[in-house]
Amino acid sequence: MLQIDLWKRLLIWLTCVVGLVLALPNGFYTRVETHNDAMQAIELQGETPELLAQASGWPTWMPSSLVNLGLDLRGGAHLLAEVQVEDVYAARMEATWPEIRDALRPERATVGTIRLQPSAPNEIRVRIGEPSGMPRALEVVRDLAQPVPTLTGALATDLVVRGEEDVLIVTLSDEERAASDDRTVRQALEIIRRRIDEVGTREPTIQRQGADRILIQVPGIGSASELKEIIGTTAQLTFNPVVGRGTDPDATPGVGNKVVPSLDESGVYYTLEAAPVVTGEELVDAQPSFDQNGRPAVNFRFNPTGARKFGDYTAANIGNPFAIVLDNEVISAPVIQSHIPGGSGIITGNFTIEESTNLAVLLRAGALPAGLEFLEERTIGPELGQDSIDAGRIATIVAFAAVLIFMTLSYGMFGIFANIALILNIALIFGLLSLIGATLTLPGIAGIVLTVGMAVDANVLVFERIREELKSARGPARAIELGYEKALSAILDANITTFITAVILYAMGSGPVRGFAITLGLGILTSVFTAIFVTRLMIVMWFERRRPKTIEV
Image (tube, rainbow, N blue to C red):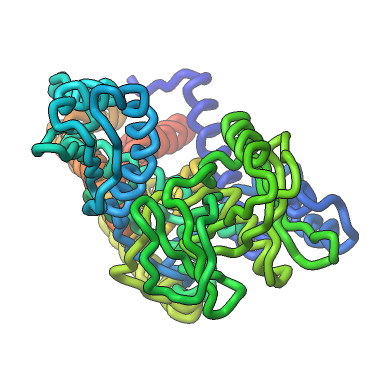
């Protein structure tokens, strides 16, 4: 017979109440959003009367999690960037040359002189004085190679070394290129995320697409060009020994050197050793500050490895200039006055306060390992986002009203129970979206509209089954009980297959597709819960109160 234990009833209603409470802040979106921003600012800056006034707009004891609005609803910037993974090959070869040189120097008696030859960006060519020593040179350089993990488990190394007469040629292996490409994109993805988080934007979408592309969507930002300024600079910081200084950009730098323009001095070019002493990857902190003359500057600090390199170099090169190079431009070339221990220093230049602050943010977040080429960029204005919200609201209201009317006309009192469950279903969806911090997009609204239509499907199956049982001269209680029992398998089958589809869409899709999949998947879970438990509980409570001899569905 119809019976639901008291603890089950309490648990069902408690779940509905929790869902309603979690969804409630979305009904006061602007007020709660202002409260959340003020609380975050108080944590960072401390309490001020203005921030406290903004924070008081919503009770602190109430939930304050909101459904984040996506790019197409709030407006913002959209970029699709391609990571120039080939840039890393040249940098890797530059960094490998000092290791090769230092490894071959003790073998001069066998291999003779060692001279770096002009080489392609992705290889190193070294001429040795004694061709007969080539086998030994190959053996020494191959010992520098490191193993590279592969999916097949096959043994592979990162360097391919071969000899042609008296020239030693070193290139990256195919396995290392593939691993390097993956590392480069992953690193670029993380650094882009850190840079965007530094400026306090809300709920950005930063995803990898394909092998070497990154999708960046930031709601609430002014324009795509503003977003490019935040993430587009590679901020490759290096400290290089200075070979010479001149005004000819086409001067021959010599093997192992490069010509770099000065950022502040127009028409001045520096010849630098290509292999840096220290790189920005060894920075652990960078903060905007002022130099001794009160001009904006940036203080920096290295990790222990970088500090040791920096200290050893300055101790051995007192009186010599060294260049601070940012994105292949010399921003400063001071003369080393004394040993600089501790691994800290200051970058000076003709900065404004804003430029020094942005440089500190870029350096603190880390250098992009490679350049970015922006294949697609769009700016979506907040007006268009509001239009999307209005259109989505109208579509949801129309679908909602149509379903409510249809269920009431088709199933009478039972249809009213289904409608109440449908309202709770929508509240539970928004409660779950708020709880997990999901982002609602325009396709996500489409998923909610679809859920509204699908939510009553389970109730329709149950009610039709109850009708069939009533035709078999069953009593009302038995007909209701059998209706739920026999419809359960069909409800689960239909919703499980749709849920699997939503999971696949989320796993394989990106951006708008994921937004649709999230609301569809959550909608299926809440629909099944409200149809199987909430509607049934309301019918049981009604039946226990009225004890009707006959019922009409």
